[in-house]
Image 1 (cartoon, rainbow, N blue to C red):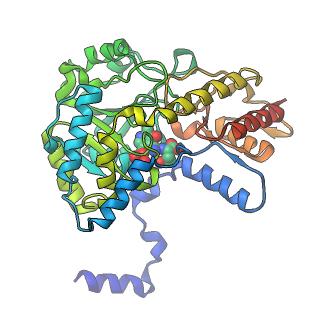
Image 2: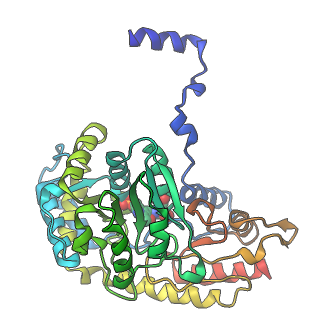
Image 3: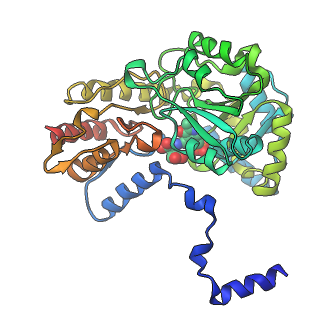
Length: 410
Ligand code: PMP
Ligand code: GLU
């Protein structure tokens, strides 16, 4: 019956383009990839573009992790893995969560996925019904907003700004909660602002959450190790909210394994069971070789990757200092991640070399065209005033990029 109907459609009665679902039509392209593709296209045309778009460590994967992957291939790891991941990997994740975060999870409370990105959409799809609200503090990572839409939810955005270091207050949180609130989704350290919540700040939010045990906290901690100021704090460490928290993490940022696609979540068993069911129908277990290598990576002492963090720290200081000399840029000193998120609203309504600047996206486009420096405008991060600069790039490129930006606005 279905086959007959498909044949009928494809005989020309309906234009196949018109069959794209409403969900996809409502979705935006990921702006981080749009801008990095633009930079790549310009480079291919011979333009000397410096791309500070993608949040991607510019380091090689540590040698011991590569060795583990090669060994896994030689040892014949080829087959489908368990849907939530190899038990040895989930045990290694449980040990890591205990070692680094003082969190106690059983392996059946952990699901490994194709990157933190899949862990996030898994969590939302496992929880959200049509019309449920998900609170998302802005600036948020671009994909959060679109993922909530994909899951059928409604985004409730809490605004922050550079003056308050892009952090929300307990009062703002409480005001945003309604009977329809299903989840709260945030990253700390934050992409794009780099802000990280301290234990005291999280304690303030926990005071609110504990009054609403049905609100699930989705805590994206993928930049956990990239914190220059204090040891990372997981919100799940607060026993009052442990049972309502999902912790998301992954290998991309800590081990420079972006293309290896391994992320994970840990949370209440009723949620990980639901995610296991969902993932079993959608993608199955993640790549087996990358999973074996991740076991070795997670069992290693975090000091093994300290050189990358030290290098990001140096670059943060470098770019932050250089930006102090760029007129019209207001920048917070972020505690972590590898982004700066300067407020450039000073330029709105003004003309720069004949180009009218109306918002942060116009400004980012102007920088690309005039300075050949690619950044990402803040609009798709839920902030119209700022642009995101990823400083996961070589120091000479960073120095040259800020010099060009300065010239373009002078
Ligand atoms: N969360 C945040 C805040 C991110 O910046 C990213 C981007 N890489 C991800 C999750 C997803 O990373 P991945 O899918 O590579 O694990
Ligand atoms: N998370 C990175 C970024 O924000 C990679 C791109 C993406 O996944 O959107 O740039």
